[in-house]
Amino acid sequence: MSSLPEADRPKPGLRERKKAKTRASIQEVALRLFERQGYEATTVEQIAEAAEVSPSTFFRYFPTKEDVALYDALDPLFIAAFRAQPAGLSSLAAMRGAMREVFGMQSPEIAGQSVRASLIMSVPELRMRMLDSFVDTIDLFSGVVAERAGRPADDFEVRTLVGALMGVVIGAWLASGGPVGPTFIGRVDDAFGFLEGGFRI
Image 1: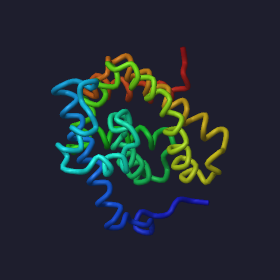
Image 2: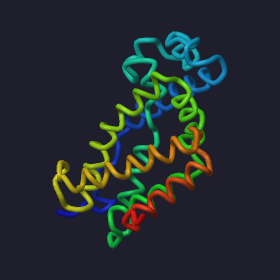
Image 3: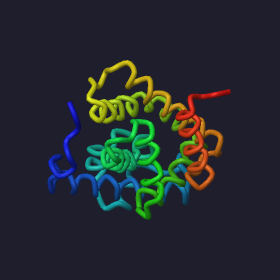
Image 4: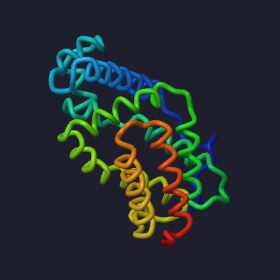
């Protein structure tokens, strides 16, 4: 089984694009408030008012205040970039190429990552939830890597590879102190190269 060519993959409909835009807008406003007045001092009601949505709309997109900080808007960009990598690349090389491509973009999603990452690093409950959420991230990316490799999503080797990738990303994030800047991006790229080299220590 091979992955579908880009032109043959279903494109998000208008409804999905509107939902993504609303989700991104709510998170952008929330991060701005967190940065200005602190995470603990910011309420869902304040976020909803600033984002010009009702609290019930907020909760349709984010079950809790923690979730608005934890939502990673880069995941869809990574998946699209990964799928677009040349077919001859290994899954690891394709993931490394996707990472370079996404972090090289000038986009609102990239711009908000430093605030979000620093917030998660500084708020203990967010940091713990973030580590828990990596299980969901492994599930998500295992499906995409398995699609490229023509394997089942629960393939043990696929999940091992994705788990290793997530591990080096966590290591780079902790080593960089939180912000998603040149230090973090350089450490992730170095870590991917370390993986590609077979962890020769």
